[in-house]
Length: 150
Image (cartoon, rainbow, N blue to C red; front, side, top):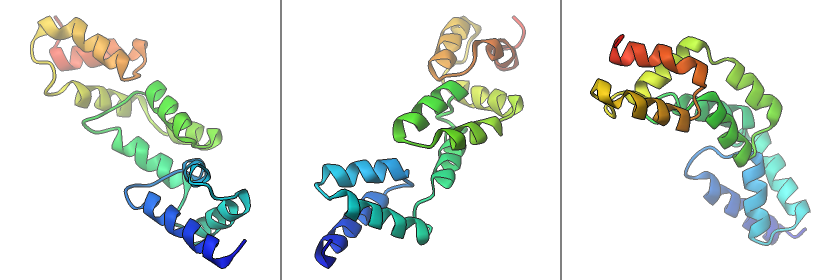
């Protein structure tokens, strides 16, 4: 492990981190694809963790919070996205367990707002929420709240 390679690997990691929070697995995969060796990658990841520049729990919480707004997603879709990006399973479980049914209802309403206006859109709205990963058993309450009881 030369100092030059360490510096190049660290600079590559910093560039990758510049846009948003990343998971350790994403950083490792990117650095590996750029041709850095396992020892260099591990050293850089340890450095980033020590400096609190990478934190899988923080990244998971931020993604869950971000996906509660206009681009709201249900638990199933969040879980799939977090797993795909490399978040550790135990952190995913903990963060998603913190979502209450009321949080999920608010997320469904946020996802529907601006996209559907008439009661004719009710079936489309249900399909849309399912595609966003919301649980089928939670749909009716959100649809009634959004469209009214029709």
